[in-house]
Image 1 (cartoon, rainbow, N blue to C red):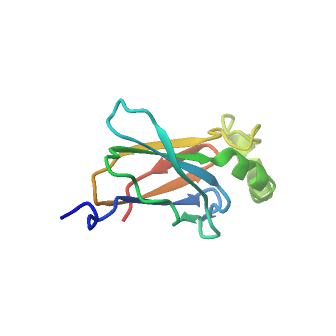
Image 2 (image 1 turned 90 degrees about the vertical axis):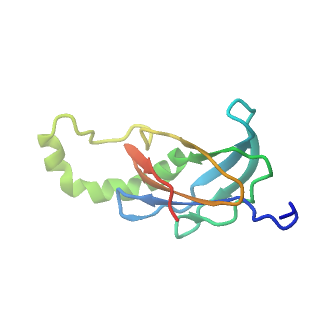
Length: 144
């Protein structure tokens, strides 16, 4: 198969805000690539999550890419949505008082102001990388 007909290597992602059970709309992210585990990172694309929390418009990866990094700017999302989340949590204030280690107020809007996910890729594959996010933690996996 010539390089002109090779299947491109691609990446997509989406974010679910598990604190409210809804997609995280408006989260900015950047996609960086490198060749080799000690190669320099090169910015390759940027996007913002849509109303469904998805980024479907990231560019195909350049030939020779071995590692990808997705950098999610989540602090702005949580700060802009803090009033919505705070209102939903007022009903559980009494329960929070009973749990001494449960934080009642977020100082900055998010404990993790940014999330960086780095993963290895193989030529010709598609990588869907969902981010499950809440103000105090996150989880990521390879989706389909």
